[in-house]
Length: 215
Image 1 (tube, helix red, strand yellow):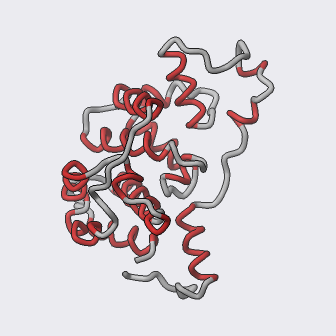
Image 2 (image 1 turned 90 degrees about the vertical axis):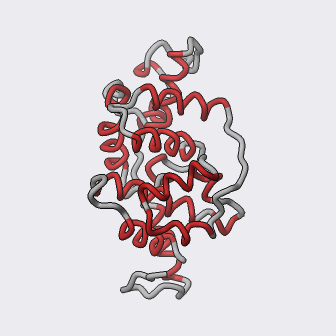
């Protein structure tokens, strides 16, 4: 099953009365882009930073019609969590807008996907950076509102972690005096990784250009 098809199936299996469409879209996107890494030796558990019983509980709650389908992507893989990922988890968890369970799920997923090499919004499978900003304002408003300069989210997270833990990440006294200003505040445009996957499949003749594979 292609990542696009998986996203479609997950979106169709959501419990619409239990949560809203934006959160459903975000969670389905994260699962789908993570599943795209499966062929390169990854697993859903490792890519999401959640394994076993906990991961199955999330699937049962938010995608109850997809449990059997997702088993094949590896739900029990063991993995390690580095110190910086743990720090980001803690930062997000204490910055939740509400105590809603889905916010805690997003905290863990964002922390894990932030370890990937692309823009964070891409490694979450989102359409653009605006969707990530909307997600942050919705679920982590106290933290999101601190990003007044619209710093890149990964850079912002770890800058806050270093400040809160009395560490020193930046050698410049302020951002305006830093020679790496563009590294933290530069352009974050690009194409959705889910869209890239689909284009690759189309170019390979594996997916018809005008259709979405159902499974």
